[in-house]
Length: 238
Image (cartoon, rainbow, N blue to C red; front, side, top):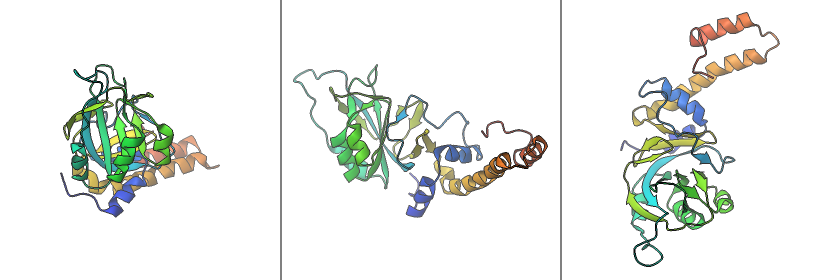
């Protein structure tokens, strides 16, 4: 992966909303506009928290089927080493590989406490989570496809491999940004330029919203301003 961002660069990204980050990414034309973000199947379970930014630690798990022998799978802790190999801050991204995801929770209070101790700020999964009160109290950003009370037969399959969550592919080490709207994957080749572009976009948007709130508003003034700022339409800039 590329050199990690500085603490100032990370803080600048965390000050932006995820929709603003998406708008900034679009201006660079490095991918299609309908790619690179998670769909609505992944819900933010801690929407009161500020936006999160971090590097993805990818994991694949199952929860549905019991082991051939006994009642539990052998615990693994080799993924702790994989977590700390990536730069701070980190986000655990877990793909539930069961045919029907969410039979059991892939993360709860204990795992979240371990993750936080290992420099993680978020948990993202297409599966289920539990212990929401505890996760909220420790300010662990949590995104999931579902919520269930039991971990069932949760166990790890792979660590550090590509995963798909919310119809978005994520590689180990990808830089993610998330808030109450969802999660976007920031392309590495434009990461250093996102903040400056986002500020330009916000300033341009502010001229439109200010006019709309002004007592001097008119359709003709709006038409002139939109043409000046966006060309002949606001399509795709809502």
